[in-house]
Image (cartoon, rainbow, N blue to C red):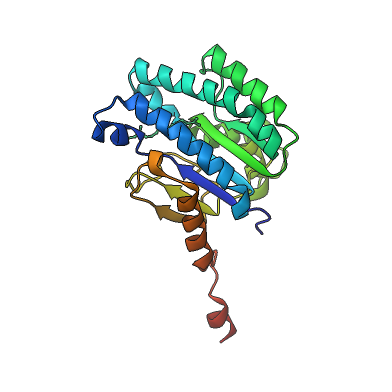
Length: 238
Ligand code: FPP
């Protein structure tokens, strides 16, 4: 039973957006950070309770150091700049993923922003950085193995997965997964949590995304019939 509305977004297309304008990729990431700002502010009025944004996958470390270092700096600056707004709007921030490989400055920015926004209840904003769904599942499985006498079922595994990704609780299933930038793949994002997610792929590059795009995605989602493997109501009654 879903108790909260969870939207997750794979923010793709920063690089192509910049390249198409003859600009360096980092300019695309900067424009992407502005889009993050718009989407975060636009989420609570749409009834979104949990918003998970994929900002940096564990596989993204394979990119050139100039790009990864630039992104880390961008994340730190974003968190520092936005914390006051988060507090004012009741947004609780959590970073999802590994923290031990983040630069010290980014770790400090994460700790400060998380502590400052802890009391927020209007929106749970989860930003995935150095995140791999498969690594999180493996980590949760290790945790389960360390407690062999505890019965293991879906709910308990979801809780362990929450622990593995620093949520500190079971993360609600994703209701709507959006990927921008025209590609149609999951890229190791929330594989367990997306078991019954509605998928939506947008051709627009992430820096062009606005609150109106998010509203349209939510409106489309609300038209869909979710069956979770059961029959539609009419068929079940016949
Ligand atoms: C994928 O697009 C995007 C990323 C790897 C970085 C995402 C970063 C942001 C949206 C900006 C800042 C985020 C926060 C949370 C402040 P890509 O660059 O791989 O695009 P491409 O496929 O067009 O090359």
